Length: 130
Image (cartoon, rainbow, N blue to C red; front, side, top):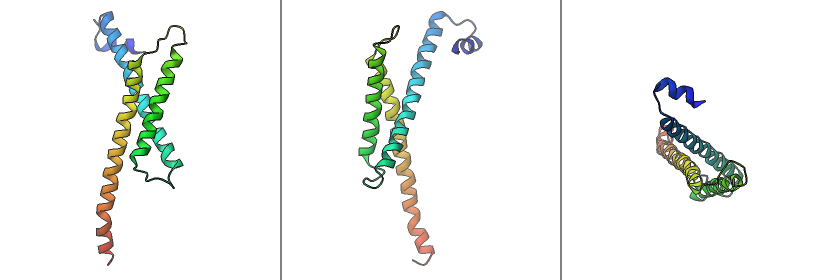
């Protein structure tokens, strides 16, 4: 799928350049996939523990990251049994990094949004005569 695009952008691409682009594309896809997994796990953990825990808790982020890292490890372990595939610790690190980045962005985004809401509450209360 990527070969026609590479050939269109750089018609004189060497096989080595094509392999590099293909390698980077695969790794970027893994980063994106595990970024999404991390966010979905975080959402599930927040929903299931909404009554017991502050939804901004670092504990919830840790659980989501740990789950994502464990899943990445199990995925690589599974690949060691599949013909033509190899297990690689670097892939686990890339996958976990994808989850970590998305969870960090989600946490920062949530804190910024929450702070903005907290800052606007007194203004609304004072405007309403409170």
